[in-house]
Amino acid sequence: VRLVESGGGLVQPGGSLRLSCAASGFTFGDYAIHWVRRAPGKGLEWVSGINWNSGKISYADSVKGRFNISRENAENSVYLQMNSLRVEDTALYYCAKSIGGVANYCDYWGQGALVTVSS
Amino acid sequence: QSMLTQPPSASGTPGQRVTISCSGGSSNLGGSNVIWYQHLPGAAPKLLIFSNNQRPSGVPDRFSGSKSGTSASLAISGLQSEDEADYYCAVWDDALDAWVFGGGTKLTVL
Image 1 (cartoon, each protein chain N blue to C red):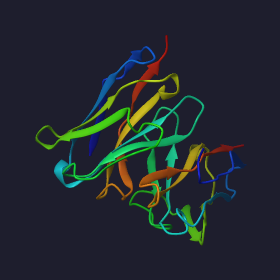
Image 2: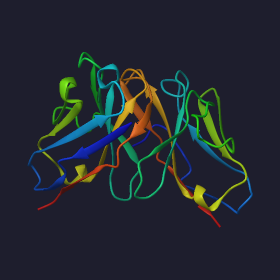
Image 3: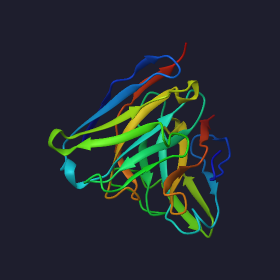
């Protein structure tokens, strides 16, 4: 199982960024995928999750209305569109594979993509 | 603010047994199985315990988990220097429709 995040970078407050998570080594279309972040000096924070067919999507209150998760099973990829970014969104963003649906725990994680929101 | 409470730090000497607690409420720990992750700096988080007390293959039996009511704990016996890491409990919260992580416990091996 391999999960590789990309798309991180430096963006100004109010800006947008799109993260990608490329998966391999498992039947991608069978599992939910999550995004979890860790801000500098803080702990892990769950951001969003999407089930196998995009029929169930959940967001943390801190990103609801600003972030949008999506997936393309034909490309074995999940995306996180981040809009109206705030300084407090600065973090290392991990994508993680669930053992089943959105309410199931994650068994594999990527190495993360760094997002820095600063003027 | 996390709704799962963990001590910010814990420590022990090599060979010792340490325990990390995780306390929550009826809407999260009280109704869901707890998961534990280990996070070393610069690495991907690693699944340590699932379903309160189950270890994935490859996780040493030095690591064990338990849960009672709205509290859970992770125990590490025979402490080793490579166990120095951050440890997180997590549960699915049906009321929030979201995963909730504890604030994390930084384990130092003295």
